[in-house]
Image (cartoon, rainbow, N blue to C red):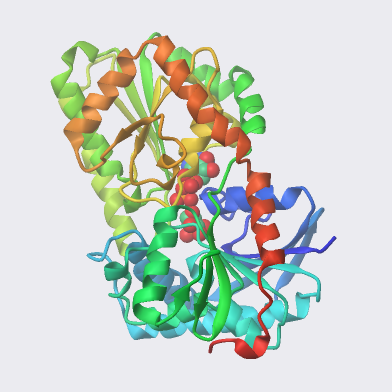
Length: 466
Ligand code: ADP
Ligand code: G6P
């Protein structure tokens, strides 16, 4: 059996404090557990200077190979091009995207450095699987160093529509770098279509009938692989939710009130201010629910050095204060807003206890919280998922209450509908949602990607675009 080498910027090394929140870290941690392998990427640490070789940490069955980043590399590559250029652009936030050339150069430099440090760790039979927007140029850098085996790439975020992508000054180089892979995977058809649109209309390439792409002198496979969750495992954890003291304490503090749950990294793509606004509209328009309902929003801080993330944090504090100021009473706080990470069992327990979840991103590649929420429900008494149509998960979970997160009145109506929904309808919707989640588990996602990678047309390294 060949060894799996996973590469991503964020690496969840066990027992280290680097953030474990974020769909990518959660999913890859689980995807590597079964057969083990190597996980290469940033250590999460900022050092005086970028490490000259990776630190290896063995925690069977996985070897973690991590690199500390120097301040300048961290600032230009991670805070800069990855999180102030590609992230907003890929989430359709052209208004927030910045394009300083220096950050782009930092991005290329760090990718080249990662390639040099990864190269000596690679064996000839390894499956090499690279993840997310931080690492797009990595395959062409590895090719430059003579790596000949197939390399796959999976994009966890959306891929933007052509007109949005074209705003990126380096769009051509980024698209060309994507074509240095043998398989490029996307979360949804929408993302794949946007990529193919670029290939056909901008690169002068073509899309063949069997989903093969010919562009920049190479042939590769571009395909949709919607990421899954560990459905059975989550269901088992959720069934024991009340054994977790924090979950019990929380339930006692709620008395008979219904509660609505929101769980997101504190990111502007998640639509949290818009969600607070919708909850406020709900309280204004459905006063019979006063005192009967509490919304809990858990939002651990993220990318704290990026100014847009500082701003959204301040904005949310102000909005939460304002909402509670307007509606709270001596014995009722309608919105509880927490800025911290929560252990997985506790989170899943909260999911199980809630009447409904509000998963209302303005744009999201997939959104694992939506899937985890469904898996955590009791089959006999499931909560209701209120889901943004702009989350990738809405493709599979179309039995959720789908909403437009830009429309606070519509979301307020969906909250009322969820709280009033008959048990029969709740069960029916839940059954329709749990089915695809059980079928498309995280293992199935990994296996189908690796299968496609092994079957991809072999590209002679000399074909490689620069
Ligand atoms: P993103 O990758 O953009 O952060 P996802 O919803 O796809 O969004 O993935 C988030 C992951 O992080 C999920 O697995 C979720 O359970 C986890 N998570 C989110 N918030 C918290 C939190 N406060 N504590 C612990 N885990 C969290
Ligand atoms: C999203 C991205 C991941 C990233 C995660 C957390 O899920 O797709 O690549 O790891 O957010 O963000 P962070 O910047 O903390 O790694």
